[in-house]
Amino acid sequence: MNLHLCIPALFWPDNSQADIYRHLELPALETMLAKSLRTEDPGRTVESWLCEVFNVQKQHDWPVAPIVLQLDGGCAKFRDDYWLRVDPVHLRIKNNHILLGDNHILNISLKEAISFTDSINELILDDGLTLLPLHSDRWYLRCSETPELQTFLLSEAVGQNINNLLPHGNDSSIWNSKINEIQMLLYDHPLNQIREAQGDLVVNSVWVWGGGVMPQKVHAPYTRIWSNHILASALAKMAKVTCHDLPEDAGELLRYSDDSGGQLVFLDNLQKYANYRDAFNWRNELTKIEQGWFAPLLQALRKKQITQLKLTVISEHSTRNFTLIPGSLWKFWAAVRPFGSYS
Image (cartoon, rainbow, N blue to C red; front, side):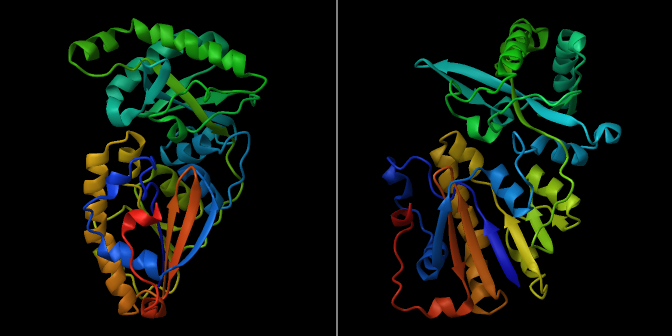
């Protein structure tokens, strides 16, 4: 079995916090990194990496909206139209910066999403637009014409100052004006008043991103994919590749070790903690991944259940690949170093 393990945010995003790695016990991961053949490519986002793996071309944006739409079961009649994601977010002002939070901290329900979008639809109805809340935090907008608009991915904006991340392009002033109108509507929305009274964060804006039309063809070099990421699952469905929910550990996956094809494990459990600079939970999750994934995969490599193991680490700064075969573990000259030395 050839196994490709992709882990966004394996390294802490803030290089100034060297102490983040102190007292982390990661012997299996450190062995993998030490014995591997290493290459480095330019930085990527999770979405751009997945699209490239499935041979999806970038349009104005990476076309996340139409791809995920078909998995959320929406609007087969308008499958070939231009779709945008318009997702609920929370904006907070801090030190002259506007910081963005997504549904990881909002945690809104589908019932709340429908209430919000009903109100927004009344506002934008005259523009011939309809916002569809097909999931609590995945809202879709169909455009009758393709806007000249480039946006930033929601994953690029989470936890960040959004001042330089707003939509741009010839139609950006129109769309930024719509967003401002929606913000004013949400400011006085009765549901937000209820949420605030309950101590919940309010939905005070939306994030426009991921626009495009459905790609004609997708293809992946894998026979099996393991992931809880919605885009990975949607791409797998389009490519007619078997996709499993991500198990808690590598045990279930290793039952398919006689699979002659390549398998992709998209393990993005660390991403949400890195986005919000939640060091405590990031460290805890990394320790769980060491025990549940790295240790058993290293053992499987030793037993030659895995013929090639490739570990890809995605970040905005670089995309780093660490590749091993069973014989790599005999590289006695490759000394095992502390995990933090690779960051």
